[in-house]
Length: 136
Image 1 (cartoon, rainbow, N blue to C red):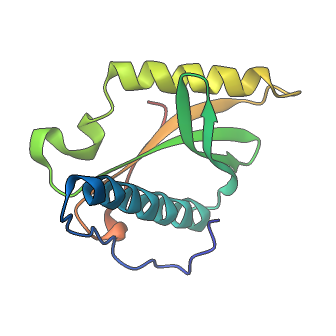
Image 2 (image 1 turned 90 degrees about the horizontal axis):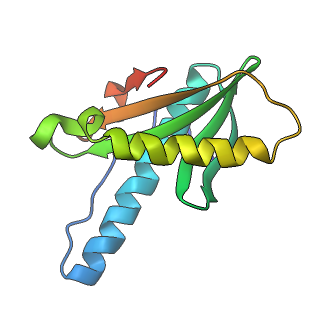
């Protein structure tokens, strides 16, 4: 759920002790970033419709409504800006998978509202520095 108080606490990444906990640490950091992204979007006036929607061939991190617009949001967080940071990590392959997942989701809906694909990117530990890229 996206019911964390605003502003959220800094995103914490546990230091992994073994490869099995490294995966768990990655999942924990990703979940914390998505939670902080939900809080950010709600503060901007969006209503969260769904989270972590999995379809064949992809996943949509957040689906939200902004008035009549259905907004599909990819959340990216990077601890460091190595290799271009969070925004640079959304390459053309990832965008194709996202668009496929969106198409699968929309096929199951009774209505076809106006929609767009956005990205919420965060570099570093503080959730106050979100970069909101609309219409990627």
